Length: 559
Image 1 (cartoon, rainbow, N blue to C red):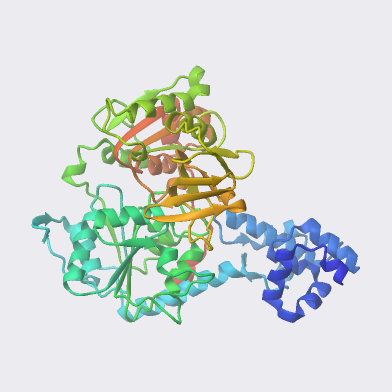
Image 2: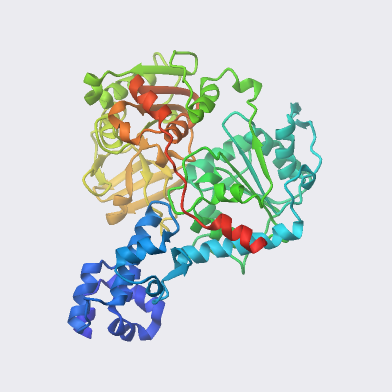
C-alpha cells in the first residue's frame, strides 16, 4: 500500500487525510476512485486502481467519478445541476447508482454535487425563517412609508417614488433582507449614501462590502464610508472566522455589486449573519453578467418573490445628458446605439483590414490620452476591456502593446502569469490578482501596482495603501491589467472605459457583455471597433440563465 500511495500526489493524500482521518489508506484501498473528488485526474486514479487490483471495467465507483467530473465541469460554467438521465448515460451507470458514493445528491431528475446541494439548501433554510417571521408580502405595505426628500450634507435630495422606497429599505425598514436593483444613473448610490447617513445619525452599526477589492474601494469612495471585500469582512484565515457561531456584530450589512456573488460565497455570507439582529441589503444591477462562480444568487432571490425588491428605473436628471446612461438601456434592449462623438463618448472605427493592429491603435490612443500636454486623464483613470484573451485586439495582445506605450521601464524585471502568456514586468506596471491567495490576503480581481522588484522572482505590489510581497510560484497568480476581459472587470469602474467591440470577436459579442463593459465607465466611454461588431453585440441575446434550484428551494421551504 505504501508503494501505491507514493504514486498519488501529496496534496491529494493530505486532502484524503483531512476527509477520512486515519482511515484514509483503507478508504483508498477499498475505493481508489474516492481520490477523484479531491481533484486527482481519472487516469491517475485508474493507475492506482490497477496497482491495487481493483477492476476498472464496469466499476460503479469509476462511473460515479466520471459523473463527478461532468458536474464539476458544469459548475465551472456556472450551473448547479445536470439532468439525471443525461449524467447517467454519460457516466455509464444507472440513475440509482449516481448517489452511491455520497458525493452526488440525486433529487428526481436533477443531480447535484453535494457541496452545491448543501449551499443551496442552507441558504434557503437560513433565509426563509427570518423572512417568514417578518411576514413579507409583495405589496407596498410591507415596506415603511418613504420620504419624498431628505437633507443630505445640506442638500435637499428629491426622491422619486422608487428611490424613496430604496432609501427607506436601507434606513428604516425592519425587513431582514432586501434588494435594490437598477441600471447606472438610476440612483442606487445616492439612496445608499443618504440612507447610511441616516443610520449613522440613528447610531446603528453597519458594514459595507463588495465581492472584489476594486468594487469595495469604489463603494467606499461613493458613499464616504469604509468598505471592504466580503472575504475581509468575514475574516478569512484559512476558514471564515465570521460564521453561524460567530456572526457579524452589526445592525446592517450593505453589499454592493451583488450580482457578482456566486452560490458558495453567498452561503458563507448568509452564515455570518444573525437575522434576528442584523439586516442584509443587497445592491446590484440585474442586467449585468452572471457571477464567474456557480449559481445566480442575486437573480434567484429576485425571481423567488420571497424578498422585498426595489427596482430603480428612472434616470437622474444629471444622468440624462450622459451617453453612458442614455445608451445603457438601449444596449440591454437591443436598440440602436448612438455612435456620434460627444462630451463623454468617442467612436474609433477600425476597418477589417486594420483589425490586426487594434492593440497598437489602442496603445497610441491611450498614450495621447495621458499626455500631460493635452489631457487631464491619468494613466490609472483608464481601463481597457476586450471580450477575449486571445486573437487580435485580445487582452494578451493589448497588454503587451499598452505596457510598451505606458511603462517602457528598462530596469530590473520579473516574470508573472502562467501558461502561454508569461509576461515581463517592471516597477510601475499595473497588475491584477487572478486567484484568491489566502496566505497573502489578496483576492481574485484585486488590482495593484508593482512597487519594487528585488529579484526576478521577488517583487512587492501595492494594493491601495497596503503592500504585499510575492515570491516564487505566487508570481504566477498575477497578470498585467492595463487590459482585462469584460468578465474580469465586473464590479469595477474607471473614469474612462475603452471597450473593444469588433466583429473579429463576433462569437463572444452579446448584449449583456457589451452592457457590462460600457457601464464600467464613470465619465467617458471610447468604443474601438466596427459597426458590424456593435450590431452583432446588440442583436445577440445570449441565454445566460444558470441551471440552479435555489428559487425552488426558497419556495419549497416556504411552503
